[in-house]
Amino acid sequence: MEITTRPIIEEESVPFREAIMLGFGEDLNDEEFPPEWLKVIPLDRTVAAFHGDVIVGTLAGFPFDVTVPGGEQISMAGTTIVTVASTHRRQGVLTAMMRDHVKDGRSRGEPLMGLWASESLIYGRYGFGVASENEEIEMDQTRVSVEGDAGSIRMITAEEAAEVLPPLYDVERARRPGMLSRTAKWWEQNLFFDPKARRHGFSAQRYLVHETDGRPDGYALFRQKADWETGFPNGKIRIREIIANSPSAHTGIWRFVTSIDLFPRVVFWNLPVDDPLRWKVPDHRRIVRKRWDALYLRILDVVQALEARTYGMDGNLRFSIDDPFMPDLGGSFELDVSDGNGSCRRVKGADGDLALGIVELSSLYLGGGNALAMSLAGSVRGDADSITLLDRMFRGDVAPWCEEVF
Image 1: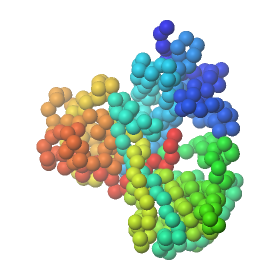
Image 2: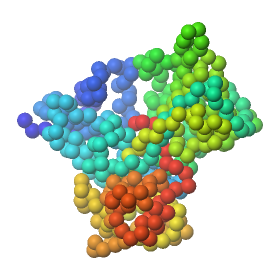
Image 3: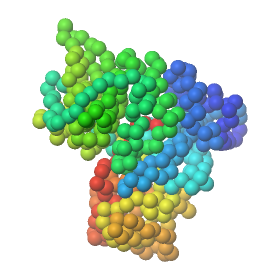
Image 4: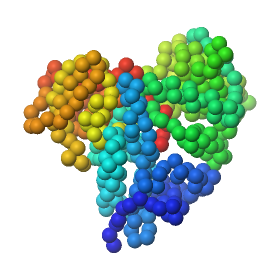
């Protein structure tokens, strides 16, 4: 029987959700994965693979805006809930769904797609490259002190947080490439929705706000888990998100979460790679750090994407882009940068200063890639001066960071 792909309709939302959970080896739990969650994804942005009447593959796209270097926020389809039933692996199911998904993004005029990869080997063949990284950190607060000036901290309720947090988040989002737009529904379903099924043995979510001269300028979301070993406290603080709009907010928040009595272990899974925390801790070796791939990006429209961001160096480059999954999206291009602003156009002919794949261009796009390293790996080809110019053009002053898995 032929496998077909299409968006789901409202009446198929339950089997669609069941197929998602089965794909991740879990059972559908309305408390952890409520029906309302699908309301943040328009049904016409879903893709289901059907074998007869049975859903054997799932995929969807959140309608995000993402910040790019220079502060512009452009449309990005947030690829999510990608599963293929174990009974239907290696039958072209994911490729068929991804092709529908890419074509849908193109039809909507979205220049970018982004995702977090459950398996890092999958998405390169569809044109996605690692555009941002993060650091997972762990600290023993009995061995850590955070130095610097700070304001005041107060704990707030979820109701107050719903008013205070979004404006502070938007301040950081305006300057940090890779950060995503959040609707009121997104805040409600993903930041403030706190059922016990999502706590995994930890406390309810805590909300704190930092104030400098009485004005909020930062916040943190975290949970606690008490633990005792041989009569000594060994509790854990698990941070979900920290947003600091000022140096004092950054210092004050980190000083607070590393000084809570009975909770010496502090963990955070998603620290920006350029975060100044380690420069505020005298013995920075006490911060155990592990770097991970984070946001994967796929450029759908080279001209639109390259003209949306700003650049670190002026200059002119001609380059060819290889896009094996969607060959018509590749080709030859010319990028001219003046006063940090880029003008890009398609050009005829294959000759140019550089040759690279859509994966590499997508990895460079948010400013966190390294064209020189890519050239040493053989994935960016050209003369040394052009490769150096490419690297300096695309490098950003602020490291890209995506604040949450979607």
